[in-house]
Length: 265
View (cartoon, one colour):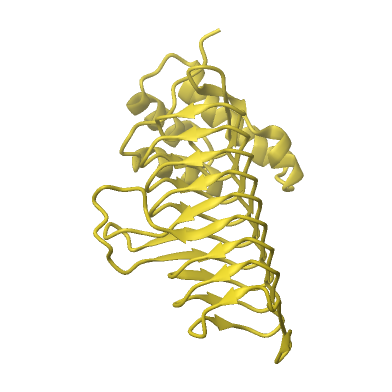
C-alpha cells in the first residue's frame, strides 16, 4: 500500500499513533507500535518489531527480526517512560536487540552511520556514537559508551559502564571489563593493549605525524615502566600539544573503571 509516498505492506501491523515520514517502507509482517517515530526513507524489513519508545532517523535499514526499544533487562526498571534513539543512515541487522532506557538516563542511543551486525545486543542506557561497528553477537551491557569510529569485532562482551574510546579496535571474542583508551588495538585473553589501531587511523586519513604522536603517547603509558600518574605527567611534559594528546589524557583522567592493562608477552 502506498500512503502519501510511504510504502506499507497490507500484511504489516502499524499502530495509527506511529509517525512515519515520507519514503518510509514497511514490509510484510513487521510490527510498529504506538509512540514511535521513523525518519524519511527508512526501510523496516519483514518481521522487524519497532516497539513503543523507538525514535529512528532517516535512511536507516532495520533488518528482519530485529527488536528496537524492547523492555530493559534490568531488575530496577519499573515501567518508566523511556526511549531508544537511532540516528540517520544506521543499519541494524537480523535479530539485533536494542533496549530502551531506564530511570538512569531515560534513553538508549545509537548514532549516525553505524553498522550493528546480526544478533548484537545494545542494553539499556548505552550510548553508541557515530560510525561505530558492532560485529556479529557483540554484547553491550547497560550504560556502556562506545565512541566515534570504534569497532567491536564479533563476539565482544562489554561489562556495564565500560567506555570504549574513539577509533579503538577490539579483537573478536574479547571480554572488556575496563575502559579502552582512544586509538588503541585491544586483544588477547584477558584483554590487553596490543598497540595502536594504525590500519584504522590510516584509513581515516590520519597523517604520519599524528600517528607517530599517538604511538609515542602509548609507548610512554605502557612501555616505560611508569605508573599511570607518572606516565600522564611525562606525556604532558614531553609530547607536543595536539588534539589527539588532549583526547587521550582527558579520557584516561575521566575513567571511573581504570583503563585496560598493557600486554604481557
